Image (cartoon, rainbow, N blue to C red; front, side, top):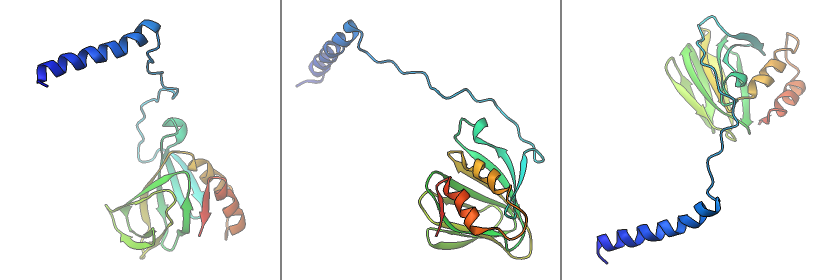
Length: 181
């Protein structure tokens, strides 16, 4: 079949296929998004909500309520030796970007030393852990998506000072779909 004949035939066929839907009003139009419009936001270095989450001093810069529940982002300022044991998220993925210091991170069974400028991605359902190593405090920007984990951090920050009650921590984390391995 020659090209011109094919185009004419195909075009007519497509037109005939669409006309019944148009005539009967059956063509579907895109529905407007149910997500509320988001407001632009500028976050300065000193801005944010500061939480002490079991020794991880977090400054929450963006939370789900501001991002249509898409992402939460915080800056962690952490002393040497502080970290989180191996755990698995079932609801969110995380990105860790080291700004200062050194962080040993394990993702999916592979342990790596992250230094300033290095990034690690921990997808949901993959075990991961991190610990600040060396003698200097570490500063790390962390993001989780979708948002929601910030609610867990707020609850963990209300626990009394001192060695944490691991059973209570595990109970709070389980509500967010996080388990320790």
